[in-house]
Length: 281
Image (cartoon, rainbow, N blue to C red; front, side, top):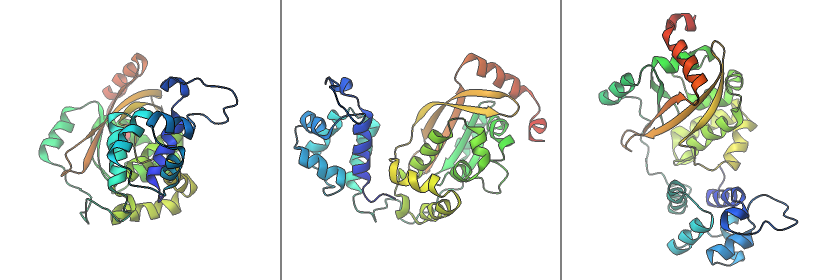
């Protein structure tokens, strides 16, 4: 894991904001996308030297006033502002608000009933390791043909990053892989012994596809969006997803998939009407 997650996040956000978004002219001879450090400094009312110190990790505890100014300059969303605050509160690499609590593997009855009510839509319940704890038959129809659910204890990041079949499943695999690494990093990451063990495994089994992302992808996965899937029976699908975080005591998240266009909706209706055993066989 990068030992300067605050600097990584500030750099990636600065690169993602265009001058036009903050009311600045693009100007000539701009060698890299995004804002210059001097522009962020001017917008936030701090010195360029201080922005450099933050990005390089030489100052990891900016004041609340500076955090607010930087958040405004970088046009951070509410979720990104909360993440920025967490990074400064957890500057100590040994910080772990979960202690040595094991990742949850049980599902509350009401949560399981909710998942049942989501049929025939695709939905999957994960713990902080990405272990699949429960899912709908709709999810099995989508992911079963790729082998994700074959393991005794299926794990989504392990499949996405280490199994070649995942690259066949997702045309935009690079972004999917980014999200899986970001999801692992959004908590204490290696300060959690259970996630640390999975990260060590992925460093070997996925290699550079995992280690490079640990160093370059901030721990802020998308909470919604659209992705494509090349399903062997249904063809190319466009799916929207929503990530619903359960209360902290559950330490779980529910991901629901919906058709992103009418064509995908029609295909999914047809797919859901077929016997599941035919798809699995």
